[in-house]
Length: 301
Ligand code: GLU
Ligand code: ZN
Image (cartoon, rainbow, N blue to C red; front, side, top):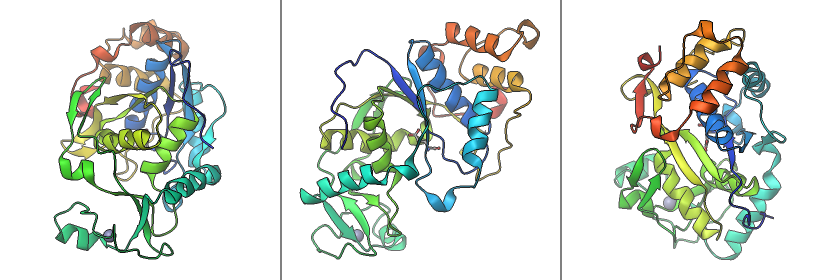
């Protein structure tokens, strides 16, 4: 079962939640460092969760490679690393609960059909009573969120058709969807602050709605500018962003700090990566981060 609401909201608990689909690249370093510094500058805990729920995208060994890279960069996590693939019982439990309240229905619509109907889901199958087996499952959206305040981006408005969409919580292939499990994990790990890339800005509205549905207070959200190689093109494992160098963590870390709005002294002034991080913990502030949803890589180097 999910843990009850935190009584001690004062203690900061942040997290970094990489998908093990490849090695850490500069974009994921920015997310790791941003969430780490936000937590450590508030004397908080920083947890790591391996988001390996989307098994077809998981690359064998990527999880341990990511963890070794974090260690090489001095980003030591608190508590035990959590793997989504080992948490089906929790997800199933909540699915059953939502289902028993009549909030879950099966959907047969293909991506193409949805596109033809305007590109967003119009809750087409809500009243059709389709069988659950071999179909995607959607959650009735009873708590649409049209706007929220982000700690970096400020007021974020969400188009009504996206806010009202009944979204998929379990895919046709039987895998739980990111948008369900991310909230269940953040609740279970008692996360108070989420710092991550701005590619997840829109899904945040859904996540806030799900916290309401589950009657649990939501964390604070801060969305960092996404690192792009050119406008609109996210640096990602899918477009073969190079892995960051495990042997020489300082240059990439200094570049990531500049990306986060800090002005670190030159490399020669630091004896070790620990020195760099201590300087960064002292200097970090969410207010120094640009209020934009993407920034080119060339801004850091
Ligand atoms: N696993 C997601 C990713 O790698 C991040 C999810 C999150 O931070 O909420 O993009
Ligand atoms: Zn449908």
